[in-house]
Image 1 (cartoon, each protein chain N blue to C red):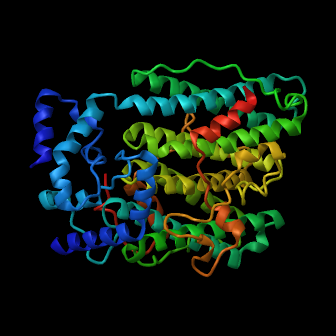
Image 2 (cartoon, chains in turn purple, cyan):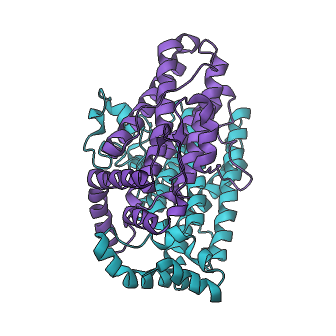
Image 3 (tube, helix red, strand yellow):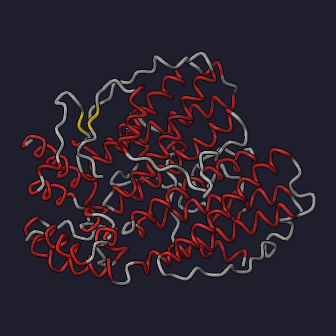
Length: 238
Length: 266
């Protein structure tokens, strides 16, 4: 238990130095002294001191996403790793099943997801989780439909994951960064959906015109079929 | 000082205190990232602001943001409603179905925003009068002009919601709903862009967006390659093109930037 806490405290500190401080300064100026930019990294740690029972046991073999904003960014990093690995595979193996404009789309998606992954890794610094091992054995990379339906699953899941995680972030700068990424994921989802069946771009929305928002446990359960590495989300904010 | 026991004491007289605070965690959102000692010393002060937010005018800014969003949704709903009614403008089956679907979402967003504002004891603004022909006289007779404006409105909507997310951080429920609208606007934008044979995402300052010079404010700043503390994300990993680096991140617009765009249609 103690080891876990030490680890998350260490992650939070390094994250703060690598990313949070400049954003705080910028947000501070924007809000002219308002407290919107406050992070609770400190309190995530402090509250653990008083609230040990909130910390669930974690399989020592599992990759722990961590707590606080670090945990949420690692959660996003895990999903971006999955998407980037998928499109890298598609571009390496499957371009032949697509026409020219679709090939360009697959190249763009590979690029976007890879830069999301690399950005989050750089932002997390030493707090970043290791590379995840993926399992795409259920996907037929010679079959356009298999690829596109998997892509739709990943993109819609990514949108729902970011939509659900926004409220779990404490730092306004991170929230805006997540917003910059999620709308691009939604653009991807719409394009993939239209490739499967034109006009279904926003059929994900409910009758209030809202896209889904999913909590990390549900997202990770849905993604687990494609990820070999065991991931612990036990310490994420709830 | 045990802050939780204070809140639990309040709960005895106000069972809804957690709802007011939204969650335990949110109660701490407004405490700064001072050193631990300094932060503990600041708790009484910060607590005051937490409870001021919970019991005071916490919804002020939130209602302002929601009314700002409502104006955009009114604009979009009005635009698509008029376009669908314009004789001979949108004839193709697939196009008409798509525009109808988008119009329905915008109407649902109007309803949801009005209801949410009222639930926060705010007053929804009434629908303004829009003049889409002010600068684009053929907007409802020329299909390509209509689609160009549709793309501009959707891409503006995405950027506008993004710019306000941080102003909703104090209210988890409203923030989540705004994000859920935001991603639907992005789906609309991608589809409309592709109806015009553009890529679904924005490259550079709208370089790939095929809009007239007057519409450039819609894409101002989209070419940004500095994210977080990374000065140039093109240099990450084994390197990325400017098209990938700018296409992968949508950028926010301020309220003022959005107002300037909307004023072209008022």
